[in-house]
Image (cartoon, rainbow, N blue to C red; front, side, top):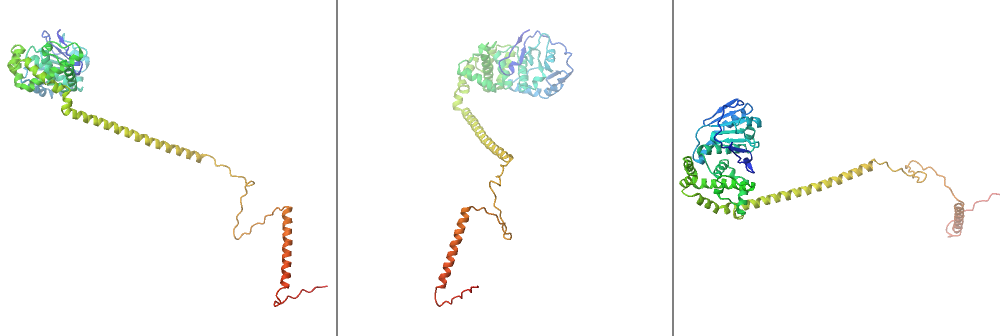
Length: 393
């Protein structure tokens, strides 16, 4: 069996494969198939579990094929068969005899037999529609002409799936230009390089060159190229007739503009630098804002912790037992009486010295009184004298 592993190190190329062995003969409908849906140019065979996926695919498959005709300038003839199952077991059971898909694949194309094999689960993946378009591209080119250069097949497929606009492709071409590792397309006609990083460059530059040819010459020239190769003309001859130029000249013109599109120059002279700077400023502002917010939150947390500590201290002080009051015997409290209540006489303890001092004071007072009386008797004559008190015998 001639099976081509077109898997690369990135994207859907890790999940799709192509079987180009024309000796394979399609067998009758697999026993696992329980339903069939038909459109104008497609026949969709599905298992019971894949019924829903088959109906969704039937609603959009014709529009996808129309987009191919607009880019290639030609539509491939006949009816394309798509087989859909769910899970690895059904996927393998729907394969052609001798054309079992590799274990890593979720999609498989048989271009010579115009058959595509799909795992319905892959259609729900983010790159599911891209995988389907990529397989259709291989079937389209296989039906339009028997032989194509490898770089042209993959370049057309990636332009049909719009993979060439991915960041991965830009990064690969940027690396190729800055490191001067862009391959010549005559070296990519039959096979890819062996090194994975070189395979990425081969995919990216093939997509970019086919896109360059389409934008420069248009779909009509692409259709003339298809007609020439289908008429079994050598690819280089059909290329010259369709584009009125040689492959060597077109490749030289394409290489001439690589530095302006994928080198350092676009980052310094185009709007890419503005967006890069703006993105950096946005990131810096976001980080600064987050730092300020974190500092504010830390400050609020510290204030809350301080308040909690103060509340705990206050609660502890209120819960502690009050200190015992001093004893009355040691510190007597004075008794206060109202104006209508006479104070109770309190016996006073007197010592001998106090009594002696009071006796002396009484004697002095008596002497002063007698002396005063004597002075009063011998005073002014005009003052009538007081008769003496009679003495009783």
